[in-house]
Length: 103
Image (cartoon, rainbow, N blue to C red; front, side):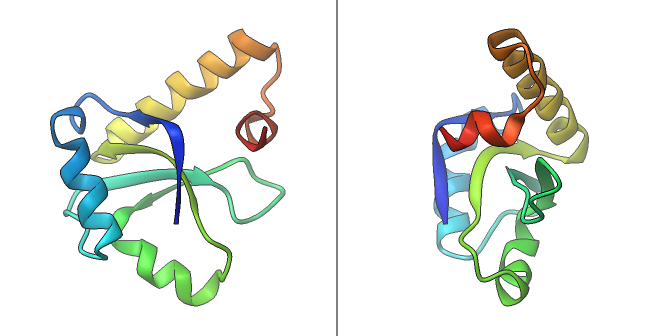
């Protein structure tokens, strides 16, 4: 898996960032952790998935996931995506998130 260099981290995950990343890389993600990734489907922009689903996704999607953010809980994940989209829109004037993170 690939991690975005300037990983977006929700406020509930900040204190445990290193531990969360380590557990995901060891394929033992913590319950309640959500990942924000570039969408597998090119027609979509982002995927929000529970970290525990990463292994299941690998069986169906051979492409390596590009993880942009981590959050503690589903609500926090959606709030983090909202912040990401707002930031990208202010920086670029567009909502083309996929292009922003592909650069």
